[in-house]
Amino acid sequence: MRTLLIGLAVSAILVGCSSGAPKIDDPKQIVEKAATNLAAAQTFHLVATVDGTVAGAAGALGGLDAGQGTIDLSGVKLEGDFDTKTGDAQAHLAAPALLGLTADMIQKDGFSYLKTSLTGDKWQKSEAKDTAKKATDLANDPATITDGLEKLFARPGVVVTKLADDKIDGADVYHVRIAVPAGAMDLGAAAFGALGPGTSGGLELLPSPEALSSALPKVVVPIDLWVDQTTLRPVKIGVAFSDDQGTKLDAVTAFSAFDKAVTVTVPPADQVTTAPLDTSTGGFPFPSGFPFGILPGASAAPGATTAP
Image (cartoon, rainbow, N blue to C red; front, side, top):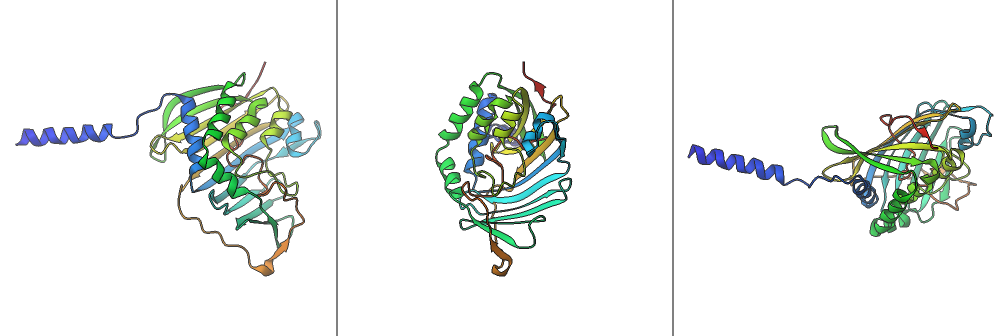
């Protein structure tokens, strides 16, 4: 009987070990799964941080001409909750080195509400066009994302590498590094979708991939992606790069609380004013492709190199 019980216990352990999701060795497949699963998520919590400076030719990213000086992005942090199906979202931005800038953003029922430390104590209300529809379209048509990634992977100079598996908060994760020439980052943003389209009213909080592409055409940016091995959802995205003109950026975006309830409440009517903002792009004043663009990243990535 004892032998039988031991045998049953060993069999149960073996079955349990073999019942998990099969491991994926192809790094491109891991990236595709992470991108499509992120777009398909009902909700998620996001924390993005940026540290470093932008200088020289890269000053164009923050509206400066080359040689005008540097932009200090130390301590920039964005945290919020997003519902990709309804378009509802709320987030808080702090950029202490940029005149102590803070911004609170709410999006609900097709309208965006923005209040910043530079625009007074009233919420500015504007129409947010098509944000939820774009999110739903991506979730229902994952081929849009995979096609964009395939085009990105086919670009000259783009290298996708699977690194050693890792652990984050006790979970087993894949670690993939994508080396992307800045000139190919427009495709990277398109591949990850555009659920946070454009900017509103010229409030350029972070550089867009298109701006990075034009300002740093010879820079190769390493993007690190950590993906949960069980859910195949992204846990963290990392970017760190520098150039020979003094630019050095180090950022991290972390995802959590997938498919948890998100409750968004609009401000009281007496605290709202109609915003004289450009709403043609809709949504929050986030860069094109955010948070599915590839700029926000992690400090684990090595410094960027210059393409030949």
